[in-house]
Amino acid sequence: MLMEELLSVKYDVISGDFIRGGEASSNLKKLLNQLGIRSDVVKRICVACYEAEMNIVIHSVGGYIQAKIYNDRIEIIAYDNGPGIPDIELAMQEGYSTASEIAREMGFGGGMGLPNIKRSSDEFYITSEVGKYTKLKIIIYFD
Amino acid sequence: MKVKDIVDALKLRVLAGEKGLNREANGVYTCDLLSWVMSHGKKNNVWITVQIHPNIVAVASLLEFSCIIIPENISVEETTLTKANEENIPILQSNLNAYEICVELNKLGV
Ligand SMILES: Nc1ncnc2c1ncn2[C@@H]1O[C@H](COP(=O)(O)OP(=O)(O)OP(=O)(O)O)[C@@H](O)[C@H]1O
Ligand SMILES: [Mg+2]
Image 1 (cartoon, protein in one colour):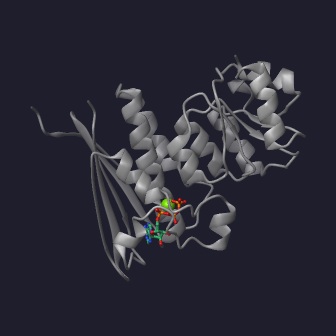
Image 2: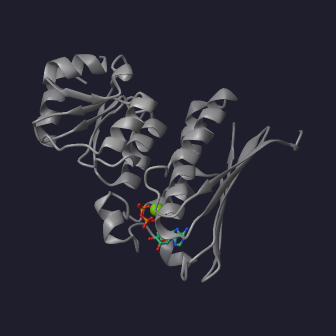
């Protein structure tokens, strides 16, 4: 099986930008549809990418989403420059959220984003260092 | 059933996304918690929500919802309407509340 990377895209994600928040995921979706990826797989990728993107918008100082497309899978890196997650196990629990009042009024802060990402992906890795960064790696296979 | 049939039957105001009125509508989902919607919404659903900020268009577009219905005449942010026009997602406004809208949609067999 060929394992070369076919395509790589990178989108900046800006802290607090609720208007453009979601655009990285939308652009990625268009690309995947053009490549003819199965629609149920595209949906899982969209859910994971959107939640990762909005977490950067809501919880971080900003970062980026990078997607690498191989012929059998997609690998998404969601990276931001902090503030980081002190307790990852706690953050992964359904319902746990530190979202601000403003974000909650907008319908964020259900504490479902990270669990959604985990459920939607075939492989999911999260690393973080307080004051430095949070990094998610999401792998979803196409078949 | 098409979105425009729902617009006619429920006398909804089309605030944006007119180009999407021919979309197929199938099933109804109502919830205002976006990550919950993200994990439970299905393609072609009619989505009823009181959220009015632009991110609802991103959610609807990613999940391929047929339209968004805003209950109780809540007015919608201009940036949301602009985005909905770009993505061809109809944003429809009703004077009914979410429950009453569901009842009407159920009668229509959506
Ligand atoms: N990129 C990030 N940087 C810093 N903290 C984060 C980041 N992503 C998640 N967290 C922390 O993990 C918690 C849980 O995240 P999760 O996405 O599951 O829920 P949420 O974003 O609070 O709400 P929802 O996703 O349902 O809108 C967040 O409230 C926040 O404390
Ligand atoms: Mg989240």
